[in-house]
Amino acid sequence: MPVDKSTVIEYRLETVIEQEGEREVFLYEGKGKIVRMGEWLYLRYEEEHTNNKVTIKLSQAGKVTIIRRSGEELASRMSFETAEKGSALLPTPAGMMELETNTKRLLQNYQDRPFSGTIQLDYTLGSNNQVLGNYGLSLQFTT
Image (cartoon, rainbow, N blue to C red):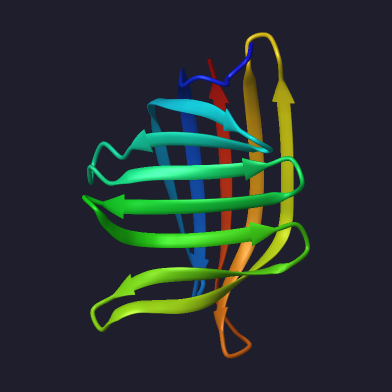
């Protein structure tokens, strides 16, 4: 199925956070939209519990960017690239903090009929060569 025009999808996003010996798992499910623009897929949805707008940009070249907005304000922006370091802008009480992402694993798999995909992303967040936490993201979507 071509997704050159905005297409409705159902998604399931699971995130795992491991910090200081503690592990938290979050699950998000709902409907969103997906569209292809050039080499990128743009998956967009609104978080039900916060009303934040989320855009996940996916490139088959091994790049992922996750952007969250609260209204028109940037809530966070994180970039990942296979076996590379990326950046993260995250909100703190003192303002936006820039951290480093280190992608440990980034797997993408897509199917044509129905158009669907799975993304597996494992990464660390750090600052000044100090790891602040280990993170995992598992995304499944289908039209």
